[in-house]
Length: 390
Image (cartoon, rainbow, N blue to C red):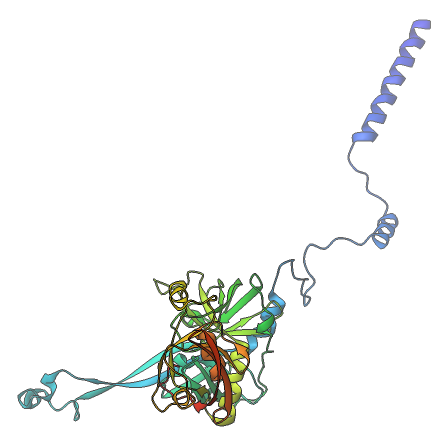
């Protein structure tokens, strides 16, 4: 009897142990319906898909807000011109005409040539900034907005020396870009380039400002480029370079490339320059700049040594236009121009910009170094001719 009781006790113990193990590691029990509802009310379910009609918050590092702000104001520009080309001399031969007819009375053929570029709407009145080389010599200009609207445009004025142009369209309810502060831009700032490369459609590329104040590139007469590594290709010319807030910093103008494609060296005209040119064009149809009639040369370390100069700032006057403003004011070849109206001259490019800002007809004081002595000259500023270099 005692053995039977011991066997019974061991069997019960084993059964209870197996039951507890099953409860601990067995499948999850379903809660009653009312218990599940209470749990949902206290702890909302995590949704993996955004609700329809709602935009998820931008990921860290996204610039879509800046792009969305600037893109509507960047347009595609289509230009066309009629090129006259001479036909083969046989077409003018009487014998040829006898058998094949007179196919062209003047011996020339008309051919329409189209080109692509970009532009930026800067005014609700329809003024658009672009590059001069985009609209140069165009017979017809059509502007295509980002929203799909199209319209003809006319040239208000151009400034080949900065490669800028202003055109105008007659559409209403135009999106207008916000002008930024290019003077506050710094190397390393993130920028977006917006345009229509190769005609594929509006495109945004990202990069940083690689350098500021680039000049002596021999692209334009007046150079103060913003350099960027944001991809700029054919068709981007005249498009917008914007900051991380979507404000306009510059007009994309040129690239350095041996292949024709982007290699990460692009140049944009600062919005400060573009605004000044645009206002002058809208006011008078062209840009008026000061001019004194001199040829200059950079001061190199070798020249500084030969002239006995203790500094390398300034511009050497290599030549003076006879009876020009500088000649009449007493400036001579060999003088070193140190300042213009109290503003120091760093180099020849700086001198060119300082003189261009002077009002024609007004008098300006210019300090020159002549035979180791500083002399101040009063020069009546002339109007810069279209073909002038200095």
